[in-house]
Image 1: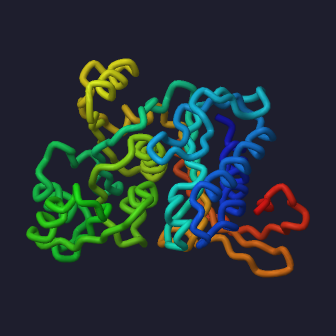
Image 2: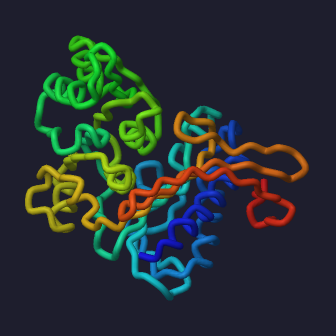
Length: 323
């Protein structure tokens, strides 16, 4: 892929973030999601690439989506798989909570797992523990491994887990082991990334969440030289058959990072919508001036860029939402 594509994708996430942030705290998650989706689709049209959406927004929240199979870009340049979540955290934005982002992952055509919209078990760690973890290991063993890899006492280790009833036993086992637990509500892409960035203080991400978000997270983890494993969790025969149709003979086979993202040339871009630990949210500074905070990274070079930008909305009227 052309290296210029990385910065072009940031322009797309910036547009989605600015548009959706205008709905922050208004209690209208679908409107926020629609604003992000419309802005993202419009910006994609200006990018030199032959993009195909392989992961769009899921059916679980019945929100507007960039649909799977949609062609993006101007039809020239590299052929790439695109995985998008125009607004990761629709409820977050609606309620005015933290850690909503607009996110994109891109890789060579055929490189991203075409994950169906179902649940997925996931585990992610930073580069110190790369190659040392297994989703099949008991959480107690994994904590020992990650603590040793990060040269930490177990009581100083932080495990980030989504606050859901399905994780109650997992949370109690982590606490019984003596590690610290950091709970989060929505938005497990940021949580996965946090395990790979030392300044977040997070050492291990584990839990069950959406499969599409898992593949997007995997692209970021690969860019950060971390490690991730996953396993799809079909809830019924229909979901199991969907796994088989996508080429998995065993719907519950263990998926490594290279199964999730087959290419070493992957790109991840995200822009904060609301305030978060990884990225600041969109700030409306007055006089039509808006500030965004983004991250973009590329697996091939290992480059990670944090980008702060000012946008003059009077010169970008297409980013203003109609209420």
